Image (cartoon, rainbow, N blue to C red):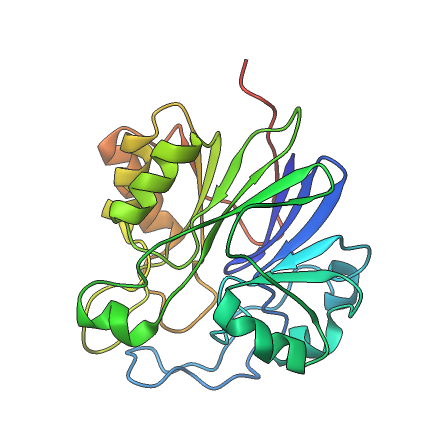
Length: 254
């Protein structure tokens, strides 16, 4: 399996015979306004794509959109995604995507995409009232013969739902959306450094890949700060923090 971090939560996953694009945020840098009620009022995205959008959408077998917040699905993605591939999404967001002419494919139960098995998982987009305000999000587990099992936790903090997904699926690789994004009120709405460490501690046999950093104005946790926290916690050897455009090749554990 090859996993390429494009930017933020946008990933290109090549697994078995499938090529999948995850949470496509493809707008040029600076073309979205800053999120309101945030300390860092810079226009989004903060950085350019490392690979041109037209290259990313070429030859796809499926797209996964965990939710329709603009840092996970934007105007360029809406225009650029091919209309003849499934766009796997939360059931309640399928009508919106179908209305855009996309191949909306609601993920309520596990299903097969060729040799790939796609399963939904739950999470919490923040804690307390903030999670309620942010709305539901979706994680996904991808499994295929002769490939590591991949768990994409989505926009979730560390919570009982993420722990349950790890317990149920025993993933070899866990991608977590870090960055500790937050507004001027409430706490982090995805994983902070402590949440990433908790994930690594609960899955000692797995590799954790932390993304969702340094590309959107509400994310305050840097790669360097997360690496330092993982070093202090003794899990730095199992938490990978890729740069934008970096590809990680992962084989089945021996």
